[in-house]
Image (tube, rainbow, N blue to C red; front, side, top):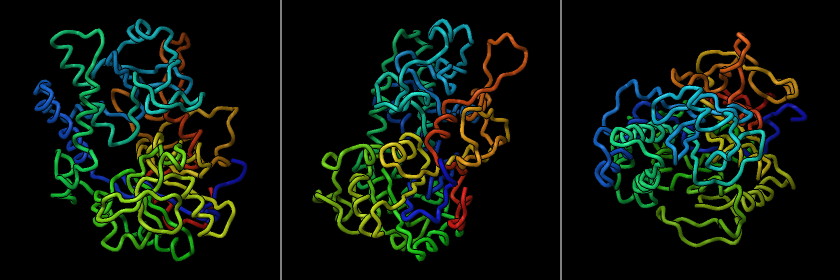
Length: 425
């Protein structure tokens, strides 16, 4: 950035819902997501019943930023330059020698899935051989897939794995558009039955901040890929029955990252009636509650609402793939990355000499909190093994590189910034 970032200069503030405005009770939610997929695979696809039992120690495997090699059943942790720092086959950690045998020189040259590639290159469209675990809704699926590999190997070590299509079927069964209304699958019925078990109320400081922003003339946006009915349940529980009054525009089923990357004709806005999509709109002419849509038509409306030819927008989200990268890359919005890993233990992060000073980029200082997995290590940094020097060499992870490249600032939760709309970073 050429100057410090200030919320006071932003005309519109957009918020993702899941794991941004709405925080979940992580242990309960993770187990529910895992169970919803595992039950389907066991009952409908004939997978080993062992998948239904998870020990508390198993959850240590979950770490954001891992890439799953779908054909080989290997999970990879990458450095910013593409070096494979750690790997596992299923849940079992691989030795440096095993990594070299399978992947050659350890430097990862292939695109990583979900449209994310090593950060020294551009982020590319999704390919089918790899999947990257990018957010907290993803992580239970990582543990499940690793345990599927373990179960399959108990019977006969596979040369190529073909379980991913069944995992996709489990996801579609539980999260399809009609699942909430039809009360089918495992996930939605459980959350509807006991939302307090899974959802945390939004802190009063954040709700007060949203009202202050609205009163100050800021345009507030809620942009979520959750469907209208589920969005309503979440918002009523965490914000109250009058939550809609906090936002000028609510967009559900946004289908991010396509909301930012797709052309308007590919993704028009649609009106809603009783949470059902109705007519497609040629443009977005007024504030309200809509479904699907695109950032181009939204920005045209923001021009009218603010009276500015180039209103400045900032978007808060927790997913690099769905929120931060596309909002920054396609729409040139400022981005605030909600990164709960910043709440963990402190570690040293190496500073690259060619990078811009941290105080100008709005990043956290050299010493930052970090979340650690015993198996995978830090989300932010790791040591490079196999070097002749006895001195430990730390390097930024691929995830850390993406944060630096595409987020304006990163914060652990909204409370860290609530009420500070007049400050700079």
